[in-house]
Amino acid sequence: MSQVPANLRYRESHEWIDPATGTVGITDHAQAELSDVVYVELPKVGAQVKAGDQVAVVESVKAASDIYSPVDGEVIEVNSGLPDNPALLNADPYAGGWIFKLKVANAASTDSLLDAAAYQQHIA
Amino acid sequence: MQRSPLHEAHVALGARMVPFAGWEMPVQYTGIVEEHKAVRERVGIFDISHMGQLLFEGPGAEAFLNRAFTNNVSSLEPGHGQYSLMLNAQGGVIDDLIVYRLSQREYFVVVNASMIAVDEAHLRSLNWGEDVEFANISAVTGGVAVQGPKSREVFKKVFGPDAPYPERNTISLSVTEEGILYLCGTGYTGEEGFEFFAPAVTFGGWFEKLVAAAREVGGQPCGLGARDSLRLEMGYPLNGNDLAPDKTPLEAGLGFFVDLTKETFTGQDVLLEQKARGLGTKLTGFRMTSAGPPPRPHYSVWHEGTQVGEVCSGGLAPSLGQGIGMAYLPANLSKPGTALEIEIRGKRYPAETVKKPFYRTEKQS
Image (cartoon, rainbow over all chains, first blue to last red; front, side, top):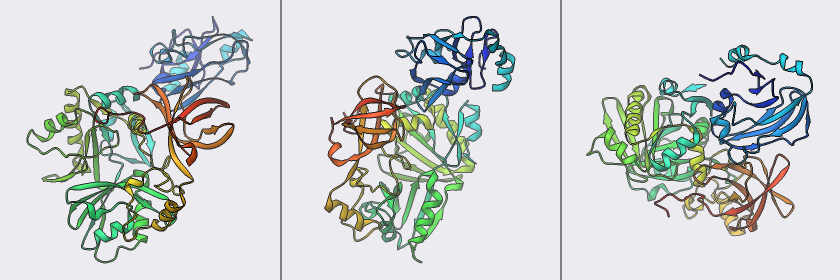
C-alpha cells in the first residue's frame, strides 16, 4: 500500500508539493512504479516554471520519466544529494528524496491540486 | 493480449505485469536490480511461456532447416542444439532462434514471442515439401528459464538427485503423465542455467516447485526487466532492437552462427558478397565514460562532431554500475577505445567503444 501523506498536494502525474514549503518530489506510488531510480536530472536554480512544465527527469533502469512542476513558481533550491544517490528517491520519496523547492507564485494555486484522498483514489 | 499459463501465479507473487509482444508478462517482482543480482549471484526463475516452439519432423527436415537457417544443423548430434538465424532474401535478420536436434529426423525450434506468426509464414513460403511435417506448439506450451550459478541445485531439488542435468547446448526429453518435457541447456543471461518447456495446462505446478527450490538457495522469480539487463551486459542481441530485417548477421557480429560454406540458405548470396566486399557497419558495444544518464534506444551516436549511428539496445548495467549500449557504427569506428558521444536530451555525453561482452561471468574471466 502506497503512502500518501495528508499534508501534501498531488498532481495526477504523481508529483507532490508541500504547500507550506514549496518542496516538490514524486510520490511513493510513483517511485514503486518506476522501480530502481538510477539517474536524476535536476532543474536550474532560478528557473521560472509554469504548472505542467517539464522541469526534471528521473531515470529508472527501464525508462526516463519527465517530472512536471505542480504549480507556477521559481526554482529556489535543488536536492544536490540526489545525483550521487538517486536511490534516495526510492527509499525516502517524501523526505530525503525531494527533488526541488519552488517559490510558489500564487499560494492559492496549490489548492487546485489533488488532496491526499483524491490522489489515493487516483492511484487505486 | 495473451496470458501465460503462469499469469495467476505471477499476480499472486506481486509481479508488475506489462504488455510485451502481444502478451501480458511480468516485468519485475521486487525490483529489476535485485532480480538481476539474484541471477548473477544465485539463481532466478523466468517465465518464458511467450516464446514460440516449432517442431519439424521427417526425412526432409534436415535439408529444409539448412536452407531456412544460417547455422549448419547437419553438424548437430541428436540431443544437441545451436543458435541460428532466419534471414530474408536480402540477408537481413527475420529472427534469431535455437534449433535442437531431437533425433535424426526431428527438430525442436525455439523462436521469439513477437515473431511466431511471421516465422511460420516465412517458413511456409520456403515450401518444405511433403517429406517434412510441421507443428507449431507455441500456444499449448509453457516455458521457464532457470538461470544463475545455483541452477544445478534447483534442478536437483525439482527433478531429483539422479536426473541428468541438461549441459550447455543439449536437450533431453522426459515423457511424463502430463506430456513431453523438453529440458534444454540454454539461456540468455550469460550464467549457467537451463530452460524447460512443457504442456501449458500442467505448467503451474512446475513453476511453483522451481520457485520454491530457488528460494531455498536464495533465488527468486525474475521479470523481463532483469532478463533484458542481463542479456545486454553479455552483449547478446535483441531481435527488434539489435537485429532487424535490414541488418545482416555479419553486421551484427554473429558470423560464428552463419555457415557460409553450406550448399545454400536464404540470404547466403548477399552475405557472401558482403563478406567479399567488407562490412560497412558493425554492431559495436560502447560504455559511457562519465557520470550521466543511461543511453537508451534511438539516442544518436556522434564521433568527432558527426552523427555516426544510433543506439540499438542501451541502459544501465546493474553489475557494472555504468551505462552501456550497442550501435551500428561505420566499421572503422568499431575498434575498442574509439571516442564517441551519445546525445541525451540535447546534450552530448562521452562514451567509448568496448569489446563485448560488457560483463564477464566467473566462467569466462
